[in-house]
Image (cartoon, rainbow, N blue to C red; front, side):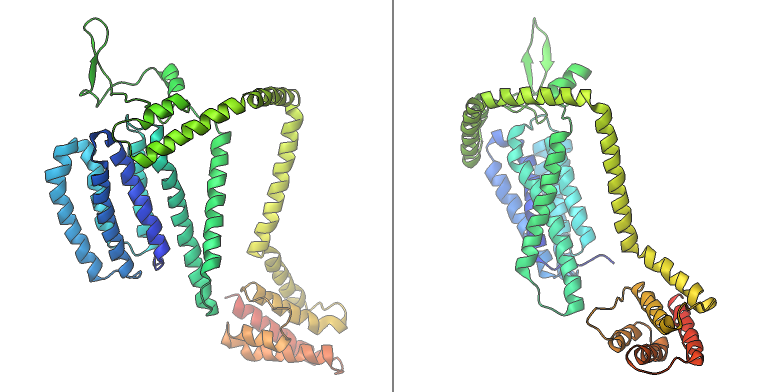
Length: 442
């Protein structure tokens, strides 16, 4: 059964992620001038559907199902009379998917449904970023989308784990601690992803064109211009300052030209102009630094080429060391050593009855029994007495409660008392230990 969603922070993250995904698609038509109206429409729909999901508090009810059916009918109507006539069947598919996602939000009450909603929004973002009108200005919506998707998934994981621990311990929720954990985990994942992006080679559109040829103009036959002596080339319209997402980063002049694009929101135009000013100042101020860095980078590459064999050997050794450390932690987590020791205890003490020194015989039986419960995730706390520990352990399996009491009593008598060693009692202790072992090994 999938985990229920009961935290509003998860729904808020999902709402913002979905709005950013549909914003990327609406941004493709920004030059037509109805970007603000279109976004207001989607904000109302997505906000209403998420509100319906929050009201159900993680349990699907007839309230959510009824709203979902109504939104599906509403979506079918506007798809037939608005989406398809306005954008055509292929582009309208994205908005039909968006309206279906709005309806699906009304029944989103579990982790599985949350992940499916995020996957649908990812499909919409991939479509928008691969469109021929998509350029670097869409990063104002793509980057926040990635941030909120990661934060939403992290919040769901941390909140569900926190609920599980709180149920076990019956303690009050620590919202500040959860918030700090969510922010820290999100920033760590984003930083790691950014570092991987920096160290991996990124192909530009110019490099792809040079290797595979220029892209064809399939789907762009409505955008034409005269090229050459009477030949008509079908290519998409290139607006001022427009560069493909795979192109090199634009210059400050290209940024300012993009800020003047028709339909560009004022806040985004101001941000682009500020970014252009910062980029221009940085390019002027760090010219010498860049030259110095290039020379250091060339020297570093030359050093790598000269010492490549030694570097590979060191990397292999480091890899083997990391694997060894990972193996140690892995075996510790799986309690492999404890499992092997418990089987050896059964052969050593239970079957062959080899007790080494008689003074330690009963202690050996006690510690062997303790290791059996460690395998059941019931370790002994250092402040617990023997009786307290075995009383807690007996709750795990009531069949051996009497045996555990007898083992605990014998251990305390011989360790803290002056009771003489009795071989017949040792035989009894052997049978008690074997019964505990067989019961826990079922």
